[in-house]
Length: 151
Image (cartoon, rainbow, N blue to C red; front, side):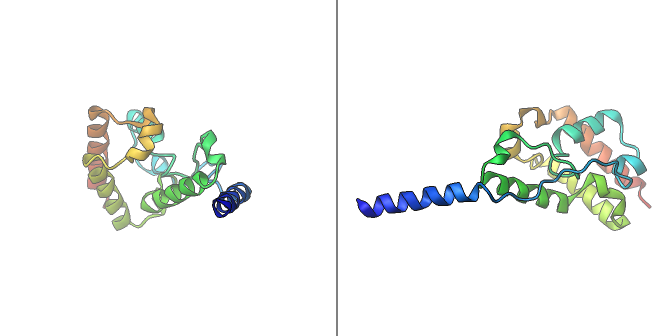
């Protein structure tokens, strides 16, 4: 019984201690000269969907919910945001090579088609990020069309 109490106490101390270790937040004030909307046509409806459902993980500015102040949740969110930005960062889109742009737009289209994006773990909490069938089709059509114009 004493061993269990010691283990629980140690876990509690660790849990409290990690609350003071915070990852760097993905917050930048912009403007973003290399943003996709600065160099390519992004219709207003598409831009609205991207901002609502994609930009938290795929831009230079993430809106953080209250639970981001709790560890280890903040570490998991930071990891997801960093991974998302590696896949595609809409605020840095014009920094990509032409082949990277095509590849990223193809991936965007594929992920949306297959229901992989936005991630279900994100949409469970952020219900407004769920894409309707019309929004999915609009994003796919836009991404495929833009990819076709890249020379």
